[in-house]
Amino acid sequence: MKVMIKFPGPLIHEGIAYDEIVETKDNITLGEFLESLNLNDEEIKDLVVIVNGKLAKKKLILKEGDEIIFLTPLRGG
Image (cartoon, rainbow, N blue to C red; front, top):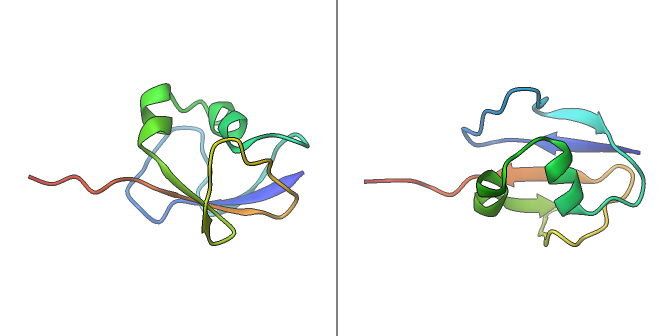
């Protein structure tokens, strides 16, 4: 199955394609998909994930053609 991932923020992670179509297994949850990208627990915990324009929970089952946007929280000082 193919999904589109987008990173409009400053998140940089080796091995992840940005704004590209990614192949993944069928019937995968968002949480499992995030783990498949080799993000660590801290990175996953801090991400805000939007799937097809709606805030998504990690238990959401992804579907062919879903658009996944990863947002990182603002940090300031």
